[in-house]
Image 1 (cartoon, each protein chain N blue to C red):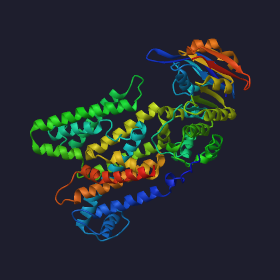
Image 2 (cartoon, rainbow over the protein chains, first blue to last red):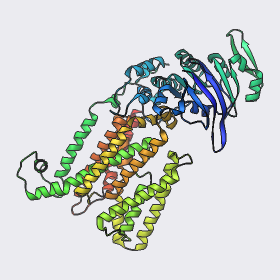
Image 3 (tube, rainbow over the protein chains, first blue to last red):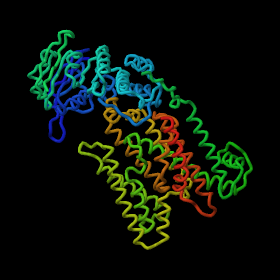
Image 4 (cartoon, rainbow over the protein chains, first blue to last red):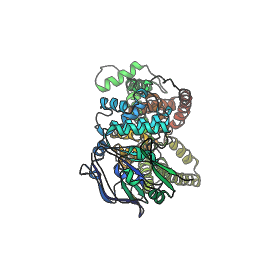
Length: 253
Length: 352
């Protein structure tokens, strides 16, 4: 699914958090959203997943206005994985994944079994099938994130929005998660903090600062010493790692 | 490190629990018809009810008919409807606000109803010639609605949404004002009988429930039950909070308004007939969650059946434990319910 973000602005109380953002995600590509804390990444992602309506501009998915859609229709096209999903409820992994079928369900009969195959497939692809009976509260951070990804996949979306999905994960789980996401072939927009990870797994990068897009394009064009200095206020060298053949940001203390 | 997966807990899919709970409720209601100041065999109870429903042609005494059909049955039906309604409202509000302490009186409804009640009981307010218990009901309902309106006005933010934290605090504020006013009026009146009547009203009683009010309570509870069941999936979506619910296609703000107002209206109806019966709405949903899991298409019916059963028994105890006097039913629900809840809480801790 193609996502077109056209001059989108959003704010609270007269303050613009997202300011005239335009970007395009081609079908099946992974777009990394970078920017310092408070640059408006989460707010933009909430607009892109339909949780907030833009004050100006529009988000088009395959040419249709996302915010004009019925909420359930929207949730069958766009799924969101938040950075730190938490609950006090005693849910099994399978029940968490089943939440993803809510936008596909009718009101009656309440709780009718539906989408069994989609649930099984989502658990398999998210690699939580073997955890199906485990309680959410007993899962590790990496397992929780996989369960949330599987829940998002159970929505059978064409677009996946990820808000700092690797934030609480160790290196192994970070790589693992990003590999899984890349392998899905869905149009994906992911806010990321780790510049190396973004460079390695994203087709395009979009850099936000104070709510505006300050750079976008392939990692090699976007990630420069100048950009890191301007946006993060950090002196760094961006090098192509000779062995891994990837961009690598080396910062100075 | 290999962690052995604990056995799959089948509790959330256990079949038949709801049916079993319905059977328990029905048997409890029959038992409640037989028990009381005058106890009678279950057979006679069934004969009376069967004859009245036209399914049995039994020879019953006028007295038995009077006791079972005119006095006890409306009261038992009223208790079942009130208990079901309170537990249902508690379950919905706990999910909607993601707050374990949410109960049906969250939106200041019991406080508002008390103000209305005290104005009728102590100040003798009367409108359009309505007097006695009808005026008490009307006054309590008006007070509950007024409190609800103030809470909603205080709680809604600039965008018209109802953030749970604000809603709870607004409910607390209005509840405190109402409590202060109620206490002030009672104390200043210097009428100890009025004070006793206000106190006993506050603790709840089903003694005043007759056929008319019983049918009304059953109907409003059933209507609200159908409405909230229609939103069972949407309530499930709140498991991971409101933005998660929104991303699953739930219109969070609209759902909150709709369910808060619908459940508040039900609570206002219940409170105005029975007074503020505590504990049922707070604790029964938690017990139901422990027994049957957190999915609302099972949790809501289980809560309703559990609440109904609890209140049927509590009311039976309230009218038969002490001869020639009624114990406030709220005292019974707390005295019986709290220990049960404490035991379940211990068990849940061992399992976790």
